[in-house]
Image (cartoon, rainbow, N blue to C red):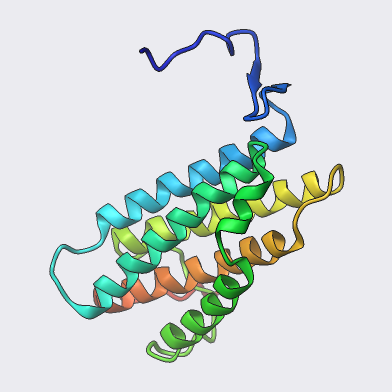
Length: 183
């Protein structure tokens, strides 16, 4: 069976419910951006050093957990609202806050803006942060048209904070020095 269906050749796509919508529909934009976020996390995962240590395994496990959640979130926007019940968004959001604090306490204090570079994994995680922010903006825009689960808004907001911290942490464990932005 081919991957192409030819049903989207005129600018429309189908949601899981069968409803046909334009490809620029806010729901399509939301799940498309969540999908894009998931792919950049795959690059971050591939870019993590292959040496085995607890810090790298920690980041790897965290990325894998987020990727799994993003599949459920993408399904939610593709018109499968019950999929959010498969994940504990409140618990995950609270856990992200703990993970952010844990990683932050293992790094030098951040007192200035930093350039968003460093190692390859850290750079991909910074890119993930930016994509998560875009996803959040699109989800907020969608929430002005239809009801969106508020737990999801909080989760996606915290996700970008998590990626920023993970990027710094990845650079830290790889020995990449943060470049301070000076005016």
